[in-house]
Structures are given as C-alpha cells and as structure tokens.
Image 1 (cartoon, rainbow, N blue to C red):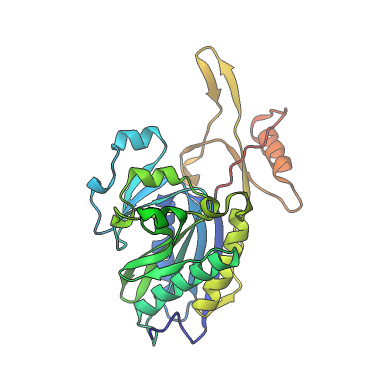
Image 2 (image 1 turned 180 degrees about the vertical axis):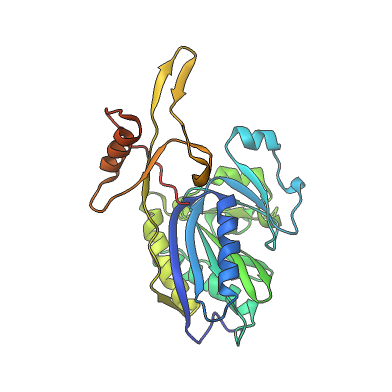
Length: 308
C-alpha cells in the first residue's frame, strides 16, 4: 500500500492570509522556496485565497480556455502561465489555496507521498463536514460522486493538486473549493477533463456549508497531521487599512490618490496606514485620513480584505 504523507515531524511556519493577488503569490512562493533551500530553515505552509484567475500549467494551452482574453478582462478574470504541473484551472474568492513550500531533501524525497498527504488532508476536511470524497487513479485531487455524476455526468472535483519540484523544493500546491464561483470553471477545460465536473462544499451542502475560515481551520489541522508538520512561531503580518476617498466631479466620480515618495515606491495609492495597537479598522481609517489630508467625515466599511 502506498504510504500517505510523512512520518518524521518537520518544523514548519504557518503563514495565513486573506486575498492575495496571484502575481504577488508567485513572488511570495519564489522567496519562500529560496528560504527553505537551507535545510536549517523550517518548511512554509501558506494558506490564502486569490483574485479570479485562470492559471495554465506546463501541459496547458490557451485552447483550454474557451473564452477570449478580452472577455476574461471584462469579467475581472486574469490569465497567468505558471511552472506547475497539469493543465488549466481556476482560482478565486471562496476557494482555499494552500502552498506547502517544502524541502524534501534529507530523507523525504518522495513526491508521491506528499501528493497523497495533500489529498488525504482534503479528504479528511471534506469528511469533517459530512462529504465523502476519494482519490481517482490517474487524476490527482479529490473527487465526489454527486447526483450529477450518478446521472452520467462524471465525478466532480472538490479539490485540485498541482505541484512544481526543483531540486527537491516544492512550490504551488492545492485548491479546495468552499464556495467559489463555479460558473468560471465552465469557461475552461478544468485540469484537462471534459467528462467530469467541479463541485464545492456550497454546491453539495447548500446553506449548511461552512464559511471560508471554518473550512480553512480544518484543512490546516489535517495538513499538519498528514504532512507531519511541527508548526513553529512566526512573525504575524502587520495590519493596515485603506481609506478610499471620492467625490462627484463634473465628469463622474473622482478618486483621491496619493503619490508615494521615491524611497517608498513612487506609485499612486489611496490613503493607507498601519493600525496602531488597540485601534479598530475604522479608527485607523479616520486617523490616517485626517493626518494625510485633513479631511473628516463619514466612512463606510467595504467588504474587502486583502493581504500583500
């Protein structure tokens, strides 16, 4: 029987974010992969979500995307080529993306065990919420026998796996569907399968499906178990708040943007500042707006969380 995951505990640091733009996530992976090349440094477990994006693996072509780049741009979906294995897939809000940046040298040189460990963690997470998922030979990821598949529509994928390996350093990872926009999968041939579908905890469970954070908590726990990761302390991300200030101009809405000084990037941004200890997001936004512009007034919270 093929072994699942790893037996010997390996130190790792957990880095959990909100939404991270996909290109920023690629840069993060490259930096962390360089860091774990030193076997004295802990592996890295990164949990986040991405903006809507179609990512092409090494075996994908643009023919796997059935809509034009212009259509994607108009609907807010990016297209990115990557060095991971596999074909095309979709990432977006409501989908948990996990990057296990691991150094497999020194006794763990078995990518198969890593893949099976990642799949097992997703299978156990699904089971936590009453969903039975399993592996499918020749098709990495986890699959569910749904009402659609029982009518001849093929199994439906709940979680995908796509890795890149360079000198026993792993990048990329898994995507687990909690409540993404499944319609976006219809614009591509997901993972190269034309006879199978894609599902999510929301499509399977309806209103009883867990929210993103609850599912991410369970997936994190099972990943640590299946990969034998011994989580070590890591520096918490700093927190900042952006205040988007606008007015109605003669030609439509006008957004207040500020130009950073050259030694701080020299790029345009909205009013942004770091949260002070004890401050709420709203208090930080009011303070930064007052300090940067002298403006005061009513602020309306926006339902957006982003990490960078």
